[in-house]
Image (tube, rainbow, N blue to C red; front, side, top):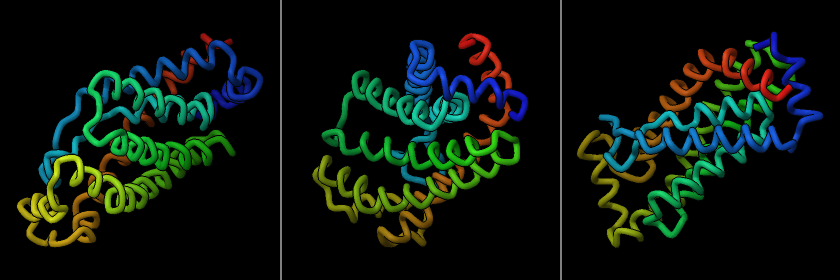
Length: 212
């Protein structure tokens, strides 16, 4: 990652909001939306939580083009998802997903932007992983779970019961987010970070050659 630091500064600096910057951001957002379709459940959380790799292109965009590119790519992903699949929570779930995604991408990209080294990339992704776990737990407890309960006209205890069926230690909203939501987002952040770490160097090189 250190090798492309000079090229990245040019792309994130002089080329900011250029046609190529916007185009690449849109491309990464669209790729993320496609990856979001290929989601799958995990055994330790209720089936309405689905794992996907859509944050990988968003994080690559944030690293290569700057934090704002990551935010815009995240927004494009959510908007495309809304157009393709619609919403069952009047947009509340999608807004919460946008917030959770940004809570991962922004800290990672901001730390990496200070000094574009492998070490800072790793530190950024670790901080992003911890942040998404914390923010994800709060957003689920106070926004997502109440929104889903209202959307499907069911008491929130029913959703908690789905968690209890998987893990008997889950008996309340607090234990739900502690034992299901937080581990889910920690795993997602770790896996996305690992995949991004493997892909970033090659992809960023292509971006900066094309943007030159």
